[in-house]
Image 1 (spheres, rainbow, N blue to C red):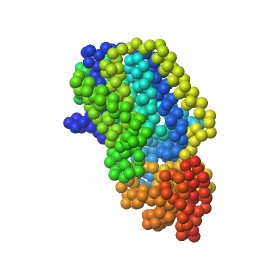
Image 2: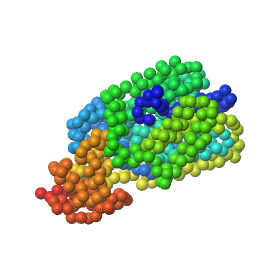
Image 3: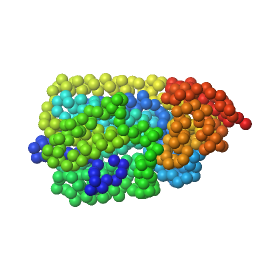
Image 4: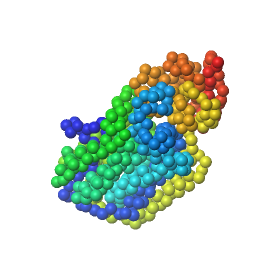
Length: 486
C-alpha cells in the first residue's frame, strides 16, 4: 500500500462498480449526520484518552523550527546520532499545523486541530453507513468507528484517512458522471503529499479504477491518474522524499520497534475489533464482487485485507474501503426505508456518545502528557547535553529543547549498527544500558530511564560511574535521571 503498484502485479483499493441491477438511491442526510456523529465521538474520545505524547511532540518541534527559520529543514538538527546528516521530512506541513495549534491553544489546541480530519472521515463513513438498509447502517457506523479507534494518537495519518475516504467517494461520484468531487480530490493531493507519505495511495486508487473499472470514462481516469502521480511530487525534496519513506518501510529494524508495522494479533483487542472488517470483506463482499465481475472491487477486497494482515497501520484504509464497497453493493442499497424507531435509536446513541466524549474535555486527565514531565524539566533546567533517553522520550526531550541521542525517527537509523543493541537494552535496567553507552555514545553525560513500570524489568541497581540525581513517579511507573560521575 505504500509501494507504487505495478499493473501486472496488483493494484490498490477502490470501490465497487454499480451493476445495471443496482438501484441508485438517495442518501438520507439526517442519517448521514447521525452516523457520522457516532464515528466522530468514538474516535475523538479515544484520541483524548490516549494523551499528549509520542511523535506529535517531534512534529511540533520541527514545525516550530520551520516557523522560526522560514524553510523546511534538509538536515537533522534534533539528535546526536545523526546531527547534520541529510534529512527529508515528509510530514513538515503537519508539523507546522500542530505547532501553530500548540502556540494558539496548548495541548487542547493540538487536540482540536485533529477534529477537521476526524470529522471529514466520519462524514464519509456516515454517508456510506446511511446507504445501508434499516438498522444495519447504525451497526456499520459503530463498528467502523470502533475499528478506526485503533489509531489513538494525534498523527498525520488522520489527514490521510480523510483524503483517502474523499478519493473513494470521488471515484463513486465519477462513475455516476459527477466529476467535481474528483477535481477536489486532485486539489487535496499537494496538501496530502506534504503531510504524509501515504499520498502514494492517491494515484494508486485512480490507477486501480483505470485498469479495472467498467466505466466509459477510462481516458479521463488515465489523465486523473497521471495528474495525481505528478501532484504527489509537489513537495520539498520531490521524488527523493518519497523514496526515503519507501526505504523507511523496507527497513528490517522498523518491525522490531514500531508495533503498528506488525501483523494484527487476533488474540488481542485490536485484532478482535478488526475481525468484522476482514470477515465482511472476504466472506460476504468478495464472493459477490467476483460473481458480478466487479474487478476493481475484487482487487480492493483481496489486497486491502492482505495489506492489513501485513501491517496494522494499513487496517484503517482497509476499513474505509470495505464500508465504501458495502454501501455501493446490493447489500447496502436494496432498501432505503429506515423505520422511525431506528432513527430515534441512532439519535440517542449519538447524543450519549458525544456527551461522554465532550464532557471529558474539562477533566484534568483529558489529553494529558504521557511522558515524564518534571524529569524533562530537570534536564532542561540543567542545560543537559549528551542525553540518552528511553523509547520515545527523545521526542519529548526535543519538545522541551534538549537534544537526545535518538528520537522516534527510526527511518534515519534503523540500519545503524548501534540500533538493535539499543532496542535490546530497553528490556533491562540502567546497568544494562551503560555498556551500550560506553561503546556507542562515550560522551553521554545523562541517562533518562525507567526504574519500574513501562513494561520493563528494571531495578534500582547501583551503576559504577553513574549517579541517580532525580526521580519522578508517573502513572506508568517510576523514572530516574542519571548523571555521569566526574
